[in-house]
Image 1 (spheres, rainbow, N blue to C red):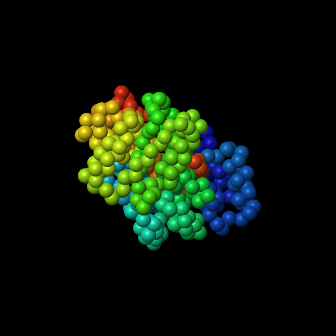
Image 2 (cartoon, one colour; image 1 turned 45 degrees about the vertical axis):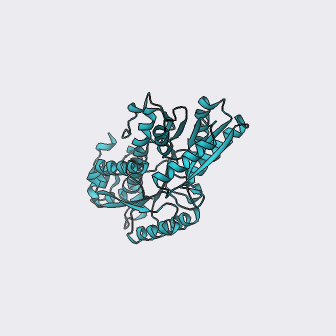
Image 3 (tube, rainbow, N blue to C red; image 1 turned 90 degrees about the vertical axis):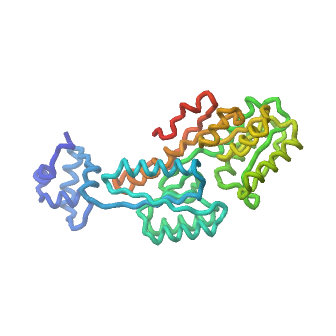
Length: 354
């Protein structure tokens, strides 16, 4: 019943004008303390719940959010993030929500800093950002705090930056989970391979670093005698270069049967294993990108851990919408499900399900 109460009814009960009630409801100035108290007393009595959606529509303002993510190939995890943000814009199109995607170069702090600067120059209403190196990300976030620009951290969580919220997996727990699943099939192995795609000795993200911590924590506690042999693949390596490195690796490590990568490119190894007809070796990895899925179906990838990237992109935009347009509170931390895909269930995984 409270939602059907008109402003005119509240004004009559309060003994003030309709204009005064409207200013109180929208927290506008030029209302005396006495009048405000009268209106608020009536609102409490009737348990008034404002229709925030109607108010936002009536305000008729447009909003532009910026999403800062790494440059990427097609059919990648990040492409699904973009698709999710686009879907959120479509869903909220009546509220004039727009999202602009901005790209920085992985492993390049200068690129991130430049994109962050360009973003700030555009006076964004809100920002979704995938963290780069901690210090440059912290500097960017401090400026957004100073300017009261709400921002969301995506993919990698750095609580000290005090974002509006975070969307992504609990990467440490994800690494523990990956180790558990791998050792279901590699429990009798004496040696496994950990493949990393690196530049200057560093992996692409803080998230992968945290996954590795979780992975090694589980292995040290439960399989301390299993040797973890690393294979670093340079990020800028050509496909021919991948093949040479992998051929050399498996030729000098003939007893390795199970491998893992904590990133989204298990197919680098998976495609090589299929091409060279090494049917007794598998790799486990992350993300249901199509090249990974093809290797999973053909047996060179054992498992994939899904992150629901589409859902992450959608929910980031939707959270900015709720916080900025509707003035609602949002949960400060949102961990994504950790789901395991095999060749038996991969075709039932719905990438665009919310």
